[in-house]
Image (cartoon, rainbow, N blue to C red; front, side, top):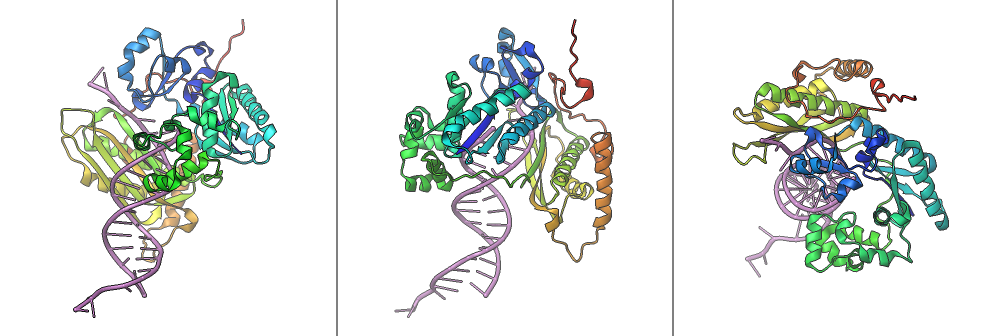
Length: 420
DNA sequence: TCTGGGGTCCTAGGACCC
DNA sequence: TCTGGGGTCCTAGGACCC
């Protein structure tokens, strides 16, 4: 059996933990640049605020209902996430951290009649230790545990823990529309609806061969999982990433090459740091720059280029030299740039980097240098030592007008409680 | 005025090998 | 007259996830 722990309205709940005044109030958390809605408390959902809605479109709702608005505070959410995962890991030896607010649990060691009890225990513990409410779904497969999780959120009488079993399975699947099933996106939804398949029960009972033809192996697995045949095990291995992306939408339009290149330089630095953190190197780097596609008037320009390094690397300096050279060729004057990013891929562990007999770079020396830079920056703060190409003034800085304190990761932001 | 950021997996088709 | 059969690797693009 599998379990799925999912934090309720995670970002919104994190904000609430340290600010009890927000209890029962509608809360919305915005994406970078305070652009889109990415998390909503239940109260905000009830007001009809949609996921992904641009903030400027709901300004009147915000005023009318006194909605509390927050910029994303990833330092806070990341730290709270770690706490939740540690608590789960204390109870269940085999867990797969699936996202910042979700973890799959391998529950095979428990008897069926114990499962709900285990779920309730974990839920209580997380609530007590972190103040965060979670929902727990249990089922024969990951997909069914997702379904159970969905039910536990919808139906308050289950108090956050629900299990899909052979006895209740069909009854439940009958009431769930296919788009709620893990793996059904907008395209598959449209296709399946067209063929009259609208409920999870219908999907479960549809012909495997037909599904395979039209929705590929991914669809076939999905249907099997609904039938209780597990196709996705707990993945304990992959904590190292296969691609790493750093990208931002600019707070203000960027026009000059210098501003654009200092942003690309910064993304390169971050990508290289992330590579080094997981002890790996990348063969490829991809750069993209783009103007604002939402603007109706004004010239548009989007470009995307790939670079292949001679030898897989995580050396910031080396990566910068290739990437900035390529950027120079991509940049065109006279455009208002809105977004840019760097992606690295072809990632391999450092121990498996293939050398080249004609390589003239002193890699031992540069790796020592970068090691020292990392140490200094860890001690004194990010970018204490930086490459000149990153620039010093960030004209393209993010807009974050409603940032909450970093309650758990910065001494100055520690809560003070006055007891009179 | 204003629209996020970060990932994974699968497939088809091309280029190449013997 | 008649032009095989079996592979691998890589990449771009699509679909999906949170």
